[in-house]
Image 1 (cartoon, rainbow, N blue to C red):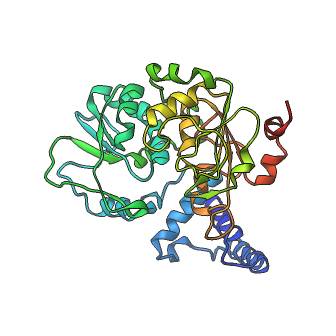
Image 2 (cartoon, rainbow, N blue to C red; image 1 turned 180 degrees about the horizontal axis):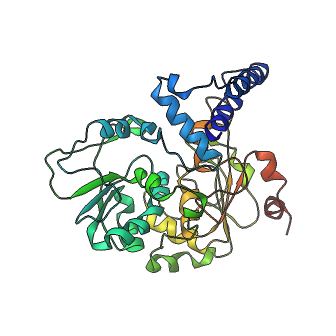
Image 3 (cartoon, rainbow, N blue to C red; image 1 turned 120 degrees about the horizontal axis):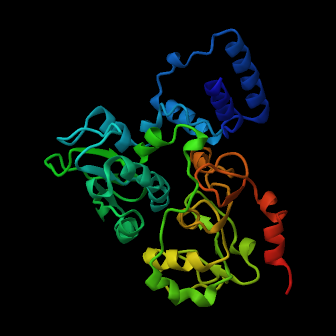
Length: 344
């Protein structure tokens, strides 16, 4: 039944079909399911299994991660052809475990929520995490493990982890994202606690912003005009802010000074953001976070492929401090938005 619900969701949210076509296809699928004619075994497109896995995640079903390995060309390839001399980790004790980050900084932060589970199995001294260079001190401080910078090949969304098959500095390894199928098999497996620690030496720099609301309105997965999140005691967390975007910003590099961004977020009352790294930072620190899903520029609707991170409702398993708004209308009607926009 869970696969049928996921298949139906993919049809219902498809931007390639008209509403009438979606309704007809759902009706056809339901009839085929009742008659036992709807068989996943007939599918040959591996990317469809990734879409199905993402849909199950959107529905809050973590019992089946089949297709997760198809999330990127790199992850799909390493499960067919291990580039290292040491094996992929099976979840048991091992002497030297190498975890390799992947995708964007926000995703690395989300996947890092599983590192405490790994430490419980192997011990902190056995774990090395290769991550974005900007996150190295954060990972070391937050989890007590060894961290070092990843090396990447390619640019942007096409960047892949550059693997060296001659390395022999581990007894097992695993991409960071593949910790999820090991440790997140049901809703109860999500601890929902804060797991990143800001540098206390940096926190003092931002005490003057305590009580403010941090906002980020533009990301790779969709955006809104900056005025959408303007209001009382609002501070910009938007890296690459344009000259005409009028929300005050702190005097730090919001793209590269991640230590500063984390320290700043830790003193804020709340963060309001579209789906971007800022939202993951705030959630992982335990700051009250309001995630307003934005339309992707290519389709004009929230990116279905990415919504496994934020689900279909107001709450999400990954982060207990997050409140998710599926539409801008939901955000505009919220008490938080009304307080933000109200006059002094």
